[in-house]
Length: 409
Picture 1 (cartoon, rainbow, N blue to C red):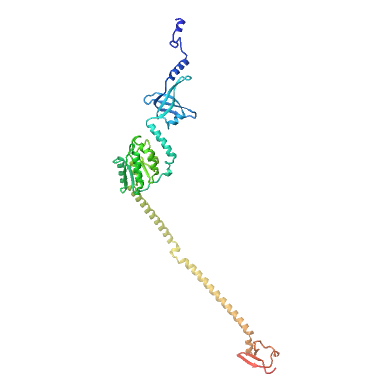
Picture 2: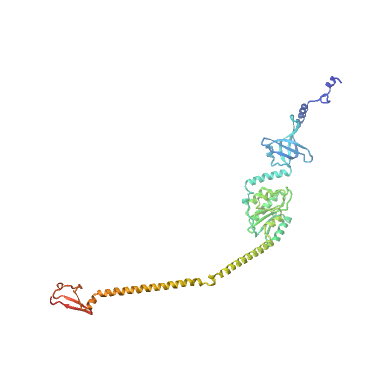
């Protein structure tokens, strides 16, 4: 074979006339980029958020084990909603070949959550909005009464949820008063119907507690219980509200705003009224404990009294008093003796003083034959020269007084 033969053949058709890899990749790029944008349905199997504007994720076919790398922007991901791995999405893609790596990827300029995922995304947006307003705050939840006088029940007519709530409430507390309002629990008019029943029961003075009950269902069936109007009506209710929707995988927003969330209607019945049997058992136990405590206390106090009775002061209460009585009698005797001695001493002193006074008394002088003369004014007459003829004098003798007149000096 000659060189002219090689020249006439297409490059890459034989090993003798290979084509450059870069040229092949460029040709592939040109062919791929002629393809337009297309919507595809796929599942997110890998998502890694980055600080950079460009984001990368991996999508996989929902029915086959075929995956592809996708490049998009942070804005597209934020617009799509709360994406997680496993979410089914609708993606607007355009294929792209990167020459440097010789790899195929897809650009995405729009991303939407598909099916139930879209509903869940919408509910998540509403949850965030209501949460930001504080409607889910534990601080605003009302406590349930221990034993409600009247229980308002909102549920479907002749539903299993109605039977479950009533049966279990009356089994636990036979005297419970249940006032039922039937409402549509599914469909477009369900939320409005439940709101009407809620407002009616909320203004009823007989009602201490309201239960909204339904026996579960699909995500679409339970959408009325995530209705914004219903959620706000429950938040504004003055009466405590119990949510008993009975759906575990996906929690309706009603569960978050209600004052109590019960997993099922039966669970709600068990949580809104006490169990008569359990309460009676509790009372019996408490009564037995109280009696035991009182008996124990009485026994302790009796033992203490018995111990006190054995003490000498209680065996002979007057013993202590007698000791002090004897001391008091001795002190009294000593006082009387001392007082009598003091009195006798004073009597002797008085007698001696009286004898001295009597010895110096004018009366004693008079008794010896002397007399005392006084002038009419009572002054003593001690000299003749003090008297004149005709003066009237008083003469005091031992047994009386004489009036005399001076006739001579």
